[in-house]
Each structure stands twice: as C-alpha cells, then as structure tokens.
Image (cartoon, rainbow, N blue to C red; front, side, top):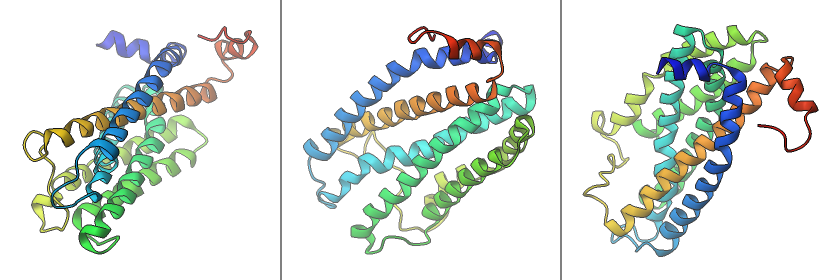
Length: 247
C-alpha cells in the first residue's frame, strides 16, 4: 500500500496513469449512461403511485449519492495531504471539488423537479434539502479557497482543513430523514423497496455516475499536474514531443 502511495506521489507517473485510464473510463461511462438512462427513462415500468414522474430518480439518486461520495474521497485525500504532505493529494482534492459540486447541483435541481409534482413546490427548507445545499456551498468555498492562494502548498493546507471540518455535514445529510420529521422520503432500500425492473437500471446509473466522476476527476487532475509541474523537464518534453508520443 505504502509503495503504491509513493508511486502515485510522483507527478509524472500519476499523470501517465491518468492518461492510460481516461479512455477506458470514458468508454465505460458512455456505455453505462446510455444503457442506464435509456432503460430507466424509456423501458422501466411506471410507478403505481408516482406514475412517470419517478423516472427522475435515475438522475437524482446517483447524483445525490456521489455528491457525498466525492466529498468523502476529498476528505481522505485531504487527510493524506495534511498528514504526509503529499502534493498530489492536494491536487486530487482540487480536482474532485468541481466534480462534486456538479453532482450536488444536479441532485438539487433534479430533486426540485421531482419534488414539484410530489410536494406541490420546487423547494422547501427541509433538513435533507438544506444540508445538501450546505454541501454545495462547501464545494464552492473549497474551490474559491483553492484559487485564493498563489502558494499551492498553503492552498492545499487551507483547503484540507476546510474539507475535514465539512465532513460533519455528511452524516447530517444521510441521517436527516431519520433525525427530523421531513417531507423527503427515507433512504432507498434497493434490495426490497424497488421492483427489480426498476432497480437494475438504477444500479447501472449509479455505476455510470461513478465512472463519469472518475473520468472527469482524472481529466482535471492531469491538467492540474501540468499546471503545477509546467517548469519540470518532463512537462517540457511533452510539449516538444511529436503528436501521439505522449504517454
């Protein structure tokens, strides 16, 4: 494990690894998204209570799930960056933040679209919705704080502290429907509460979003590595190398 972390701490090797993974993840994301969304929005049966409006679930649930999953990954990377002073961990946090913010925004917008026919309103200050909105503000604050410092090491330290402080919001989001009396439905039990014909495309969409999150994160991480290491000889060699010679 430590040997692997040491290898990933080397910018050139991490850049190359990202480059090798991105094409495969891109293809996997496109395939899973196409299958999951078409199956869910077109071929899955209508719900006996919600009718056709429930189909937004195939967008909302994966986005909401990975809005928290991305933040948890950021917290792990932030901890590694603060404890072991790994620059690549700081860059990973910076790469994840916009992706997590996008997932959170999709979850909020799709949740509003789903809530309108169910609750009769686009937005209520429900515990689950409010804590998810706080998560979006956390992502925005992390992105702003990263760009507020010219010193990348100082920026990484400040962002890492903010990320770890914000972790307290994750259990609030998850358990809000248990701790408070809210309009938001409880967490979905995909083993029992959903018909198999609806459950399988939902699982595919969840995997599709995971693959898409990984793809976008690695793309952004490669760009951040190039920006930070732009004066290094290996980056200069990439610039001057013939087209198609990049690893």
